[in-house]
Length: 271
Image: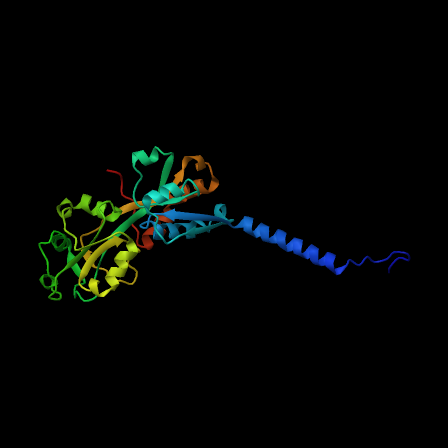
């Protein structure tokens, strides 16, 4: 029952509309703050493993409120180091060198990312032994017919001298270091595009896992080489809760199990 003399206050519509707009704005700001975006840039070889890592790290309570954007494009290993000065993390394509750590950088190794070989659609070859692979790159075998394939010259696609994958292959198998590539390409996507073109029909190329999705991967028996890839962070951020969480999770049995199920290998120990 309404008391006599008390009148119900009715606010003007414009006041109610303004109040609603302010409420929505505050809600929007809260959502934005709750989903702080972390851009993760750097080397191409670590893109797939980094994306998988943050997909799983993001499920942990400590990572709630963060949105991770692991860009597919590569800005190289050096670009990842530089990016860690602007963002919490950058991506690496190999372990940090002493001079890179001297820039107040530290690394989080996520996995050993395998190097894979891919062949053109018309080669007629699906597998070979490690010795045959080395003979191809040393150009002791020059025709696919010698491997049971098409009677066509083998086109060897390579990379620039300092590219991470090629550097690792040369260190693992010095006998192929002097190979004369028939085609030298600078970027991962250029290799993929070349292998998709008519010029790549009888070619062989290499790259890190994830580069050759839906391509004709070569089964090389006895070959298991890759690079310790992961993340780099600036030491000024060493006490950030997210950095600490990433370090701890990367060392966990849960992450190692998931990484191996995805096809990555346990990190190799420093020589």
